[in-house]
Amino acid sequence: MVVPARSANSPIRIALPQSSPLAVPPTVDLAPDVKASARGPVLPGDTRAVNWFEQASAAEASGDWDLAITLVSPYAECFSADHHRHHNHLWHLDLLVLAQRFDELTELARTDPHARRRLNRALRDQAGGD
Image 1 (tube, one colour):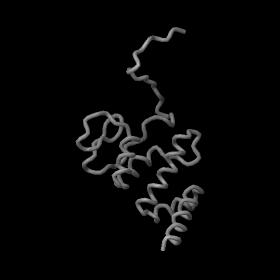
Image 2 (cartoon, rainbow, N blue to C red; image 1 turned 120 degrees about the vertical axis):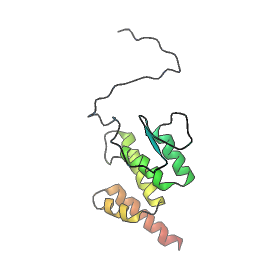
Image 3 (cartoon, one colour; image 1 turned 90 degrees about the horizontal axis):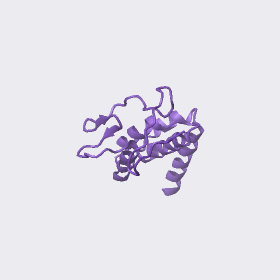
């Protein structure tokens, strides 16, 4: 098999079937000032192509928990065979705690052991901090 040469800067493109767990997730409702693109949401004033992970990290760093949660949740999956999706699930739970969305976390904790542990830790931290 001959692999065509490519420059160091050219992206590798892989076509995924729609049923693939790595395929683009369905559209999510975003804040009014966030536009969607083929690669995901684009933050206002940003003209470069940015992936959802960079946007979610920037939103988390700026304390915009709602936007970060909106960007991470489509890529989060509990007990996924894809370790990235599982890590995103744990990140999603951390963002819920930072946003103080304890009702949402409590609902997830009914069936999700990770959410249950994260909720318990958050409540323990709150009790110890008073």
